[in-house]
Length: 318
Image 1 (tube, rainbow, N blue to C red):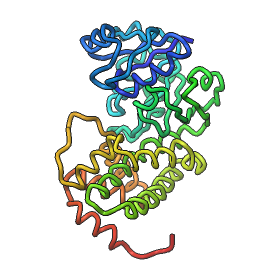
Image 2: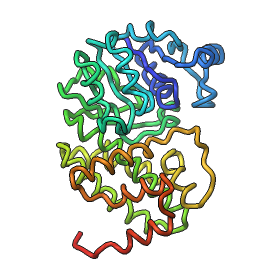
Image 3: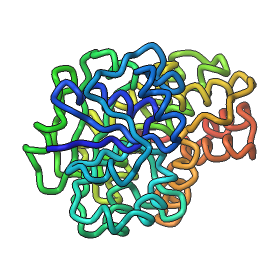
Image 4: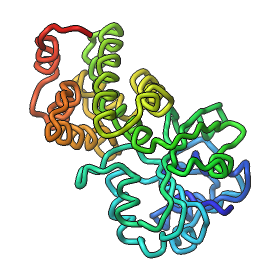
């Protein structure tokens, strides 16, 4: 089975490196100059410095060539996926499309499988998600992820598993993609707590109540509770809320510490918080932390006011 990874960011590059242990992989870079640099230096200095690309990873900016593969991993920012699928829908028909993005499309309120079904109804949609940092995968460190596909395909699980990448499969695509999307929102909140100097006890409380919000929201949208309690939900929440490797945590930390943040860095939790808050309001789902993250990232409220508002909420049973 031929494989192309569409997107030469850190995570796409890491997946290509890991999958190359099984056989040849093509990595698509949108920028032709970036592709030429990677091919010449055998490293992705822009996005994943310090890690060599195996010889059986081919880098190309020719999308038509990359789309010829049987299995396509979509490793692009969530807010770009809809336009990509719409533009190339004809060539993607009949392909297996595995989303490796975590988020909710702010324009439609859909997750990646929803976008795939909408734009490429003839394609097979799957989601690869869970607690993982690109640097860990690229360096061959053990990582476990969730592979969600409605047909419960063991062959797809086998094709994407590597010696250091262990996949657990599920048919709950809704739960898997919502877990990966929502945890970014609470990672921003956790970073804010630490950046503001509120301490680890406050972070633990934030993570616990954030998980309750994740579960409440996901169940209302048809997810299964056990999926949110697994790798793609609770597991990813723990990782991103406790590590400075997380871009979402870094943004939150900068907000809490009132420090500048590089606006060129893609932080999926910002758009996801906005999309989730809108969906939650329309469905009357209570998500106060997500609402505060939205207000913070839109600079509508200060960190201190957000903390005070959450602490002032009515006392109730857990």
